[in-house]
Image (tube, rainbow, N blue to C red):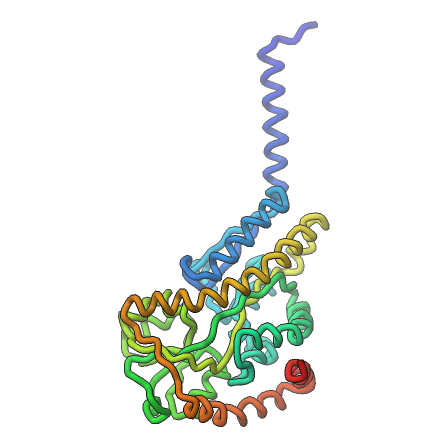
Length: 329
């Protein structure tokens, strides 16, 4: 018995549709929240990672970015959001996660790291401990992205420590809060989403952050001066929930790790160069990129020494081992 051509065509189309549907259902989709606005360089780098993961896995793993806290998670909540599976993958500022483990603030201790190369060197000693902590929180670190040097952005010019006395400044972790209090400022710990409203309302008069964030916040509308204090150094971690990770095929896991390892050095180099670009942009909008005298920087270091040493002692031998390895490099 002959089957009409139109019936053959129908069944062929139906079969193709079933295969296409099955292929679509096989793809894994991950939502990735970020606290930073879409224009921020970290969002752009993570977006590049997501695109290359899609290509490397043949579309089997697709990551959708949600910047500006649009999923409702604030920065200090990111580690728990990924740990508990509220999202399968996330981006988080490392030193904002100290509420879950104080060791996550180790690299941000005041005036322990001098420059960008020092941050790289510290990371080599620190990463094994980070891997241990993240594994204990049901996560795997995929890669890290550094923030540039930290600065203090103010409404008024600063020539000495006297000019900072009593100034209400946004801090972002225990370390920055402690050092600002020690030099006579009045720190107010705020997540990034609350910074610009607090400036506009007069709740704070200065902000501790990096140049990309200053551009994100259009600081030229509310502040005038920026000073490279470099009191702390910080990195973002992109980590994945282990349950989500283990649900992937071995082939896809291998592909994602290869993408992360290849891109991470590139992201570090770009982040270092990005600082100058952002500072030029701030200057173009009328902000003054100031400097600190050697005497003032030495005063800041002296104020920070006791805070740093006491914190390392309280964090215990694991912290001390990382610091010792870094200092012996």
